[in-house]
Length: 496
Ligand code: AMP
Ligand code: MG
Image (cartoon, rainbow, N blue to C red; front, side, top):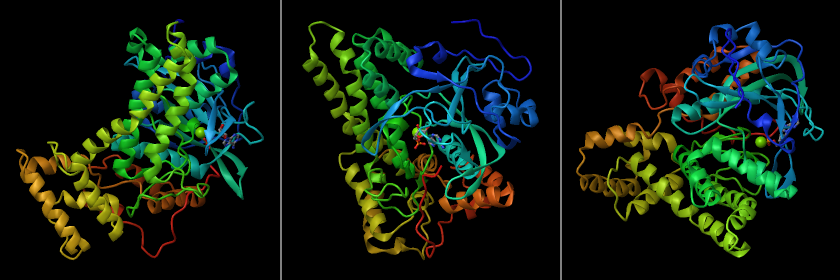
């Protein structure tokens, strides 16, 4: 590794390993300066955890840095190459509007990518303008931070800067740049890109690089590439189980939007469910429901199969006796085990949501029965689970429904069969069932105030509430209310 220079003033400490990789993997590209950058929101706590001096960066200097107008010391800006299956169709892509500044080494010696999203066109822009609008960048900031505080692996948001320029989508919108922080931006699509080029030696070197960043201990495994596949698969199973647990719908789980770090990445047309229904879709472009709530686990498995395909040449070359067929078999076994691994994580998470410490063979049925009732009764997903932790189910609500009462008594008997006290069960439930999620109507209200009326207070209040999603604070009660039932069905748009 090169000597790392530490910027004494603001704390930048870059060690850019990606920029040392084969040039097939990226195109060097400086951000294109913008007219009049201003900080709209800045994440002090995240900045400090990265070893940055938040006070120095929250102002004109930070605006210059987080817009790309001024490069931090030792930044080596580049746009990453990748491919991806978008709604099932393979395409060569790459960062069309994102620029990686470098890898920041934190005081704890952790490595994080620092990327500007919306920093201008690159050689991968395919006719796009390389820019982003303020609303969608603030939306990514709010939802990614909410995910973090809910305990879900995710890229983080360090800052949103307005550019003083307009971007044109269907209409003219204020432009903005988001600074995204990630363990890495290596995607399933990055492997697909290398595999499509057919250069196995670069693919092998890159796979070892990715392992060094995310699974260094597996480099010593008997079959490192198989162990890596297994590890990436498990991280996705954990991640998607966590999405399901809080009712999060990503919206565009294309292979280019699946990070091998297991972080949720690329907040486009995503949203949290209010009323529980497994077929819920928010994205206006997802007409077939490919990325509907209930499809997220099988789609993750489908994406992982695409990932496994890219590793096949490595699996078979590992040992001369292992031919193509054997490699295929090994990869298949890992992919076929996904539903079981997912189910295990899902079931354990759902048990915690219901206060269950022990395991019984009928637990999945008990959970499914509740979900079926929720779907039939149009129950609010988040509020139903949280109501179960209160021990005082609202007398007036539909919890008086006979079907619910039947389920409730099954659940009570199940709780009674475990040694833990009801208090312990409630405590467990209160740490797995959030009171507040970033509800769509709340997020929209915050974005509208910010982007249309220059009023940031609505968003700031929402961000504060979302920092303690599991705390039962009476002052946050309004954030727990579902949207007005008369309101139009919520849709998110891809014009991000
Ligand atoms: P996404 O749907 O955000 O994952 O983006 C898919 C691909 O389109 C990625 O390669 C992006 O970099 C690219 N892209 C999205 N928006 C733009 C834009 N405004 N200009 C150029 N490229 C873009
Ligand atoms: Mg993407």
